[in-house]
Image (cartoon, rainbow, N blue to C red; front, side, top):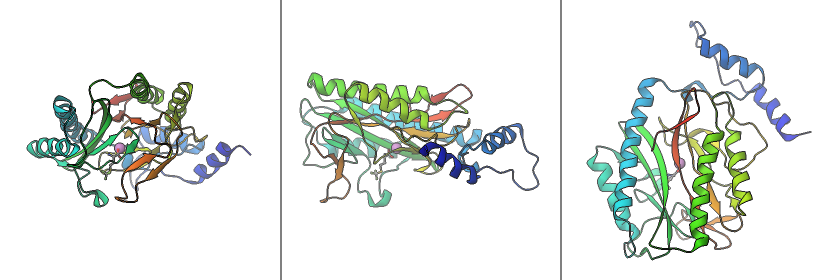
Length: 293
Ligand code: MF3
Ligand code: CO
C-alpha cells in the first residue's frame, strides 16, 4: 500500500482540532473540522495564533532582522566568528531582547556560524577566522517579551568560486520556491516536495536530519517542516500558523555527521560545501508572509 495512504489513515485517528467545551464552533472551527473529517492532520489549537501573539512575533522578528543587518554591515575576511557572536549578543541585548540560542540545550553562544562544509550549528570561536572565499551561514534566533523568531542568511566573504556562489544562490531559491508552494488550506508537505525538486534539478542534495519548525510562543514546535519529499501531506496549513523554512542544501551527498568534539557542529560527510537560508513565515489568507524580512 502507498505509504501516504497509510499515513493518512493514522492521521485520521489523530484528532488535534476540537471545539472548547461550552463554546459555539466558529466558521474557522467548522472549516478545520471538515478537513479533519476528511483525514487531514490538523494543527493543535495552540499553533493557530491570535493577533496579539502575531504582533509579538513581528516585534521579535524586527529585532532578529536588525541583528542580521548588523552582521551584514561588519562581516569580512580576517574577522573571527567570535566577533560575529559579539555583534549578535550586543545588538540583541541593546534592543531589550535575548538571543534564543544562548543556553538552549546547553548551547554556549548567541548565534550559529557555519562555514563551507559545516551544515549548521557551528559554534563561534576566537580561533576561527573568516577567509576570502568562505561561504558562511549566520543563524540568528531572538526572544522578545517571550516571543521567538528565527532566520539565517548566507554571506560570501569577498570573492568565492562560481560553484560555491551557485550553491548559495540555488539554496536561496529553494527557500523561496518552498515558501511559494505553501498555501492556506494546503499542506506543509508541499514545501519539501518543491524544495527537493529544485535542489535535485540543480544537481544538489537535501539534508534530512534537520527541519523547519513551528516557532513563536516557543523556539521549536510542530509542524515539522521537512525540506525533502516525505511522500506524506503533513499538517494542514491554517491562517495564523507561524513556522520556519530553512533548507540545508549540499553540493555533494546529503549525509552529515555531528562533530564528536563539541557535539554540536554538523558537517557534510563528503567534506563538500553546504548552504542554508531561513525565514520565519506567517500563514495568511493569501499564502506565506515573511516575518523576518
Ligand atoms: N537556529 C536554529 C534553528 O533554525 C537552532 C539553533 S539551536 C542552537 O532552528 F542551540 F544550536 F543554537
Ligand atoms: Co529554525
